[in-house]
Image 1 (cartoon, helix red, strand yellow):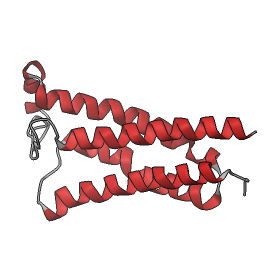
Image 2 (spheres, rainbow, N blue to C red):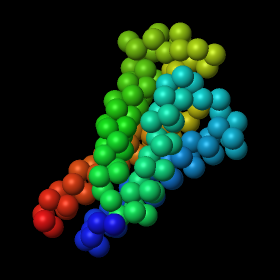
Image 3 (cartoon, rainbow, N blue to C red):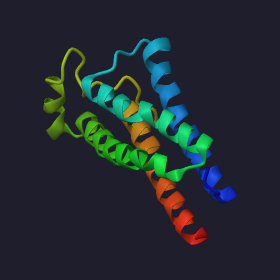
Length: 144
């Protein structure tokens, strides 16, 4: 086990909690609300779900090096979510969402306040995880 500062431990736990909430939210939308995920939603899930395990193990073992794949997955996830959000909101890209599979990617099951959709929520989760991981790296460098 590595000696982490209390702040670094808290950041790892916060990142894990964000990933877990995103996982629970996506399962809520599909299993409870009955919204069938499109192909881009599945890609976002593939990028988000391992983060719960990656950051959970990193927090348990107190080893930040285990969490490096999480930074990469969350970085990719930000761009996938942004693209998915733009497919839903920009008329120029909405045609690209029609050929997405059984469920068109331009369908917005949720549209709170006219801009909060499921890809928007996923994007925020990926951004929070990415930024917190960068803060974690900064904290580790400062504590050495």
